[in-house]
Every structure is written in C-alpha cells, then in structure tokens.
Length: 103
Image 1 (cartoon, helix red, strand yellow):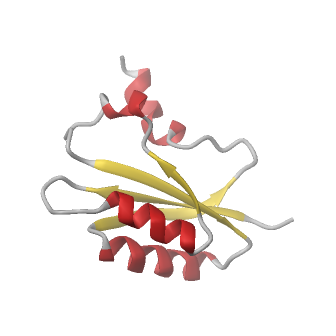
Image 2 (image 1 turned 90 degrees about the horizontal axis):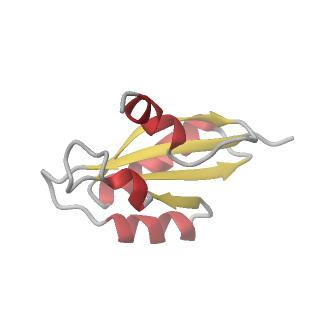
C-alpha cells in the first residue's frame, strides 16, 4: 500500500500571496488540493490569512516537502509541515481541533 502524504501550507496577510494560483499549480503537479473551508475561516487569528493542505500518494517525503516548499514559495506561501496521513484523514480537522475544543 502506498503512503499518502499531506503538506500543510500557510499564506499570511502580511505579504502578497496567490493561493488560487498555488492551488492550480499543485493540481497540475498531481496533488489533491484542499482549500480552507469557510467554517474554519472565522477561527483564524488573522482574517486575511489563508491555508491549504495538499495530498499526494506514493512519493518520497523529502522530495514532496522540497517540491511543495518550492511551489508554495512562488505563490507567497510557506510549507509548515509534511508527513504521512492515515485512511481517516479529514482536511483541516487536526489543525483546528485545539481551537474548536477550547470554544
């Protein structure tokens, strides 16, 4: 069974970014792209920020991290983490779980 990898990308409002362009480029590179759902936007500390999770199967983790960092950087984003995910992965649930549990 091939390993699924997810990379988390943050786009900060303190600099110009193009999350739409990044999403298109990741899709062209074969990634499954998950944009930040509206239900989580109201939880953001900085309302102008944006977030994305991209998933790909069967690739080397270091190579994926390097590729994601290079693409994200071109569009004003920053790859925060990359690693394997399990079959029950749901986009953004783990990222926002601590915030949602505190409310």
